[in-house]
Amino acid sequence: MNRTAIVLLGLCFSLAACASSQKKLQEAREKDPQYQYSLGAFQLNSNNLDDAQKYFQRAIALDSRHFQSWNALGLVYSMKGDFAEAEKALLKCLEISPGFVEARNNLGMVYQEMGFPDRAEAEFKKVLADPAYPTKESPYYNLARLYSIRQDWDNALFYAEKAIQANPRYHMGHAMMGLILERQEKFSEAVNSYKEALRLVPDDVSYSFSLASAHFKGGEWHSAEEILEKILPRITDPEMKKDADSYLKSIREKMRIQDKSYVPSSHASR
Image 1 (tube, rainbow, N blue to C red):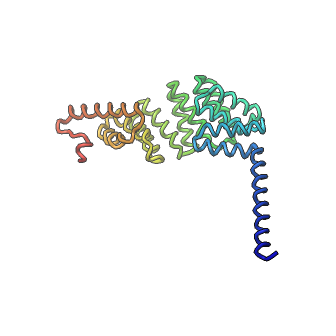
Image 2 (tube, helix red, strand yellow):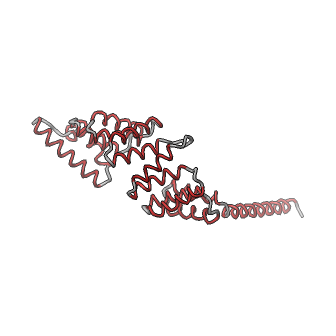
Image 3 (cartoon, helix red, strand yellow):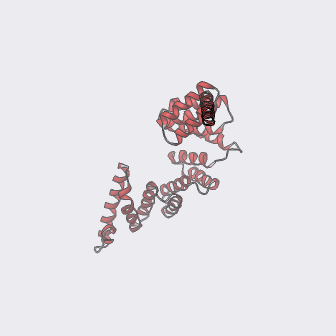
């Protein structure tokens, strides 16, 4: 056998061994619940809910006590709006691992969506009672949201402040603070909170709209108009667009009454 043939034969053996190794690796992964969970987590982060659900269910089929997959499956059901199934999955997770408080935070959000605020409040407070829970801004924010729905503005403000203290860069906390202050008719303070949320997420249209709303309600019509004119082409939500048009119409009427020489900002800039 010449040298070329020996080299080719060796290459064939190498490729065959590599293919066999890859096949064994793939078979092992198919039977590994943690690997299936990782695939599901990737799909969930990409917002591919059906694929995520499939992988989490595979992980559970391989290991019925894989509590991370039960939690993630509950999150998928919640995002799909199937709150009854979400509750079942999250309760199963907590049955297997009572100390996995992330599932409690998710369960609290599910209860809030199901219209059980007392249950939601209890779950969020259980999360906060765990000194090792790393991202307390989330349950603080959830409690602020819960109390704002109840129109308990003092408690809502307290928990919004706690969310920001836990994580000063938590833009949702600043936006929630703005909402609460706006509802309390503290418009200048609400403006500052919305500005901070926008500083952290400059391209968020909803935050810009909220800032414009606070300016409008505080009588700062020019500021409100300037923001609304800027974001109007970027608004995709029909209700928000309707409200923006209504604000602009009201501003222009008010400004014409106040100053007959007024020209809308969209025309003045041309």
